Image (cartoon, rainbow, N blue to C red; front, side):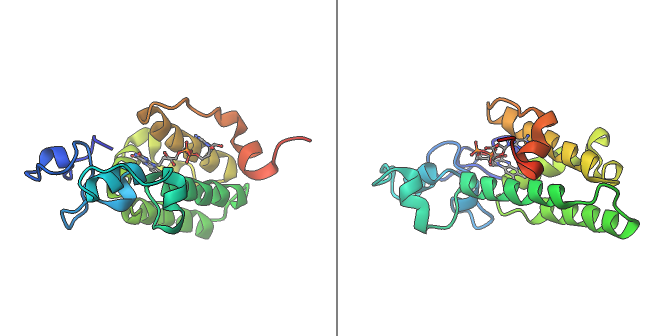
Length: 170
Ligand code: FAD
């Protein structure tokens, strides 16, 4: 994301890098923070990827989109298996898991924006860990925040359980 405070190529003196490329702590393009196409272009002097990005990336470490799909799949599936009424220990585990996840998610710029979203009083994870319904809805809202930021249509959160737990009818 371009809203984060760590450097993007535009904010550095590395003139050779295309604008908007997110850098890692080592000052090099961050593989898990950029699309494969952008990462390839930034690390190959501006050349286009040799084949379709998804095909070319299939044997490579994940780009921001592959990591994102896997990340959301893990998170929503964890929500789907969360008890409808979680006990205090389960609630504590979930709070800890989400705050650690938001610190160690490998796309640092995504993680930073996620922590910013989580830090708003109305998005406080402590208020939603009592059970599956509240936690699943919270995660759906979190995902929608990213969808909107990326210019995508928000997902209908009334359908999150059908998408991630029960499956569609028929
Ligand atoms: P995804 O958004 O990955 O969604 C996968 C599937 O989930 C969809 O096909 C749909 O069936 C379902 N779905 C969609 N929305 C919802 C919802 N609200 N609730 C439940 N199910 C839903 N990418 C960036 O470029 N910048 C970022 O700052 C960024 N931040 C991220 C933060 C986190 C915590 C994670 C896990 C990912 C982040 N990503 C970010 C990745 C981004 O959200 C997408 O995963 C990526 O762009 C691939 O998108 P996609 O269209 O394939 O579907």
